[in-house]
Amino acid sequence: MADLDDLRDRFTRALESARPGAGPDPAPYADNLLVRWQEPQRRYHTVHHLTAVLDHVDVLEEYADDPHLVRLAAWFHDAVYLPDRSENEERSARLAERALPEAGLTQEGTAEVARLVRLTTAHDPADADRNGQVLCDADLAILAAPPSAYAAYTAAVREEYGFVPTDAFREGRSAILRQLLDLPRLFRTPYGEREWEATARYNLTSELEMLSL
Image 1 (cartoon, rainbow, N blue to C red):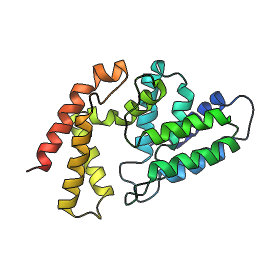
Image 2: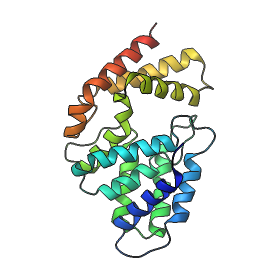
Image 3: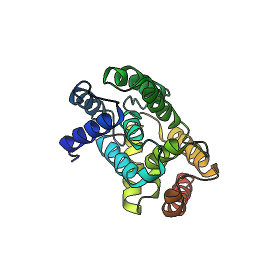
Image 4: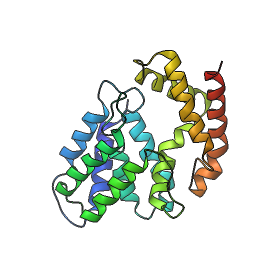
């Protein structure tokens, strides 16, 4: 089970570190997000995924220009998630644009969080985009998981798309895997490239082969 109290504390620290001064109590904003992350249609995009992304941002924070904004973007990046919709990232970014100014974040900080959320649509940050590289690497770190964890991840993704017929799922999932494998680099931070790249490509290639059987 995810530690919801710890997650609330982590949101509070990120928001209070990112905003310029005192502001509204962060707890209601954290609680609203946690309700979203625990919606029943989620199987992979749950509080466990949120926790993992935040943990990976902690590992990579030295590469970010604004790690607290990256953490806030992690909170919002799948805050709106319906498996049968294609605009989840956009809707999540708009949620951040509504909530964060009310919570005391500056216009510039809010714009950066929303930009980072939208970046997770393609996971292809620019070479100079240090914040984007950290968020995308943290979000994709599951691809470099050990075999049992990677298998659990793929099973959870399949459950989220349980409404999709098997053949259609195989075709769609295979297209996503090929798109990822076609990227020059899956991971853009030095740590991600060094520690995760080779394992992730092995996992993706193995999954693609299995889907082709």
